[in-house]
Image 1 (cartoon, rainbow, N blue to C red):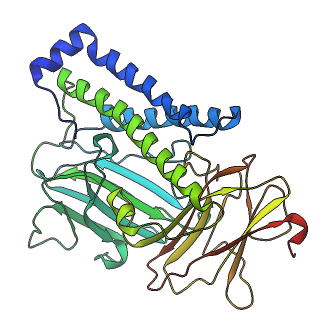
Image 2 (image 1 turned 180 degrees about the horizontal axis):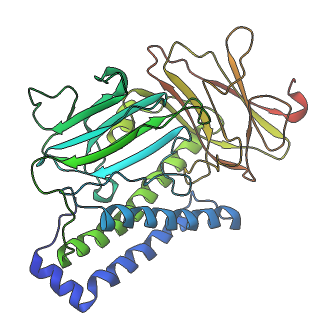
Image 3 (image 1 turned 90 degrees about the vertical axis):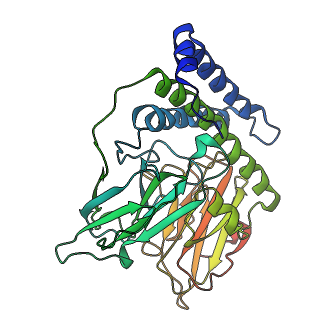
Length: 372
């Protein structure tokens, strides 16, 4: 795990340009992901890959240079419509903040009507390596919320006696992740949230050479680390292409996944006249969804294309089961998932709070074999 350099060393590195040179060199090294044996070698997927690296770099700089101070936390959107990683959920509105177990914080806000609202504290971040194991979680359905929708949450290592809602931290906590999960984006209202530090001044602190040295180094490490991690995952998923096996829950949680979700990650690849049919009978659960990603584990563009389906948007069979069809052209099925010019990539099926999550079944068929 990378630790900040001493003040003297950071000043020297800033003055002689070493910090910036190493930042650029590390970003250049991240491009080697394109040369991995398991990476696609066509121009389309390579272009998406380089765009992906630029997106991660943008997100990293926003996180570790602009808003990295846990003494003055800022809730920000790091993963969103044009910055994606790790099979980002199209139903989610993600927010992050830099925090520390050394301090105490308060989140205030209005609950809104979004289907699921959850708060998670985690160790470190992707830029440090070593995973992001959880240190605390809290869901809105377990919170004390006033009749007008207002609430407050205290974040601390020890629960205050007067805190109606408490989000645990540990001394190692470094990140707050908020997930607002929609069933229907067109009708649900996001929660409005604000975070502040309670045990000291909450204003921004002046930039220091040490802070910038650490921020640029960590940003570059994130680009290399996250890109390499998810490239390795994608390559591993090809061993079970066009099926959806259970993803190891412990592995998911270690790297920041929601422990209340059962994940089925895999790879897909289809010829021009092929379709992937996915079938399952949803159990009693808070939510479920399926999504299609590119090779780099970025969700496809859900702003303009139907690349995912969920508990609310799906059409169901008479017996309560659901059939999802991934195909290059419209087969006339209500649960058609568009490939948006891709012939391969990763995919993910999620069950939220399901006691007995079923294994989704898959089969590849020709377009002629699809029944209406």
